[in-house]
Length: 573
Image (cartoon, rainbow, N blue to C red; front, side, top):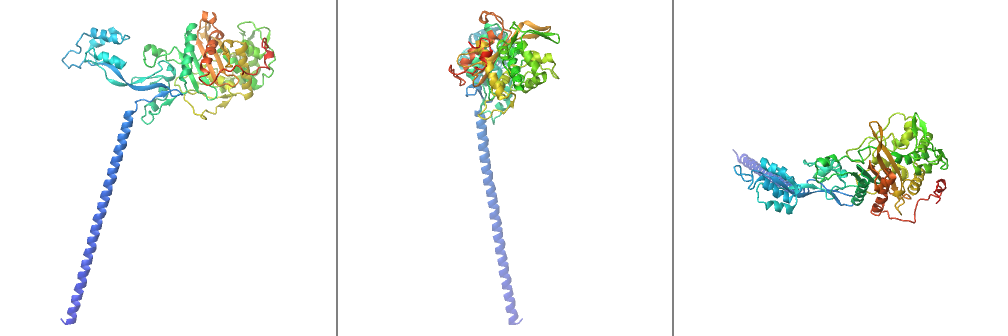
């Protein structure tokens, strides 16, 4: 090998060695880079995971803590935030016969002696029944809702078998007030009957049970309504009573009562029998309270335009049935006089001019052919004649017979009649400003204005005089209807109703009160009709609730009756 060839071979070898070294360095760098990338990815994943677990655990712990702090059922309040139903921890009295072991006797003292000592603490306990439970050897509740001081007295008895577990209890701080609105909660924690049932899911849901449900009820108006209804019911020996106070512009129910009431804090067999709601679930023939609605329909249709026109007031026959009045009212009456004196005969003539089809349409527009619109689960279906109404049917419906509805139907209809002519559904939920439904127009605004005059005249000159609370400009109509029986109407059993609104120069509220089978007593001047028993209830109630609801008495204001007074006998006095 010559020198040139040797030199070339050495140079080639060096180049190859450098190339191999460079490749090794590049591979090493790539390996380091991959290791670094993998480390970064693993570290990032670990950081993300740690952060997620920390956040998730904190959220879980926060949620669990929030749920633990919330009561198992949400609160119900009135429109002003006063509590109507709430959950709170309470003691219960539980009998555990195995508290002293399987072989030991369950009680230190005899069952009769323990029962006697418990009776001293809880006088309403049935001593014999408790003794029997203790002697049976079976575990079970002896009492729910035990006060702390009573719990201390139970412990002082010294019986280990008498345990006092802490439980969450549903409490109604107003007692029986508003019972038919609220309902109650059963042993499984579910709402029954009233708004407890309506809002059951909301009140139990952890996401919403921390938000109290505000009802439209004003607890002050509710208490006054129940008080006056109870007074009226007891003073006339009536078997029941019902009443409602309704906002004429929004449909909000400020008070709703059905008597006798039950106590939602203590549900027993007697309470279950009293849960039927007379306001929303019982249908009645409400008699002459329908006459203003009939007159309003006729004014709206243009068949009553001249209030000086006189109609025959003598009894007459239609399809073999005699339509007459309770008392003779002379040969003729005009429409204002017919309402003041509550004439069936003249109302029938007004219906004859109006026609059955138009009267039926107005009644449908007022919702008289369907269940009342309100959130309560139990709502009565009216007794309503379907198909085409014959002449006699229309006449009797015109003065409140042959159709049976709830007092709530009547309240919503009167609200439409006085608020400018717009019917709206009733609601037990508090509405914010602007939330009132638009409703549907039933009467013209001019018709509503005329009806406000006529209703005020009834309270001044007619059967509603006992409801005329000074300064509150009450207007309304009485209704006294015999209850139907197996063989026709029962002469000795009536439904007595007064439907009112106030103040009539700018109506704010409708008030409907009803007495079921009132008797003639000293308090009612030995009369059974609404003028002597239902109307006075309204006369006492309105001054109590008016200022509470923002209506103060003002003797300087009233409805302008100057164009109608000359038409009414004695109206110019």
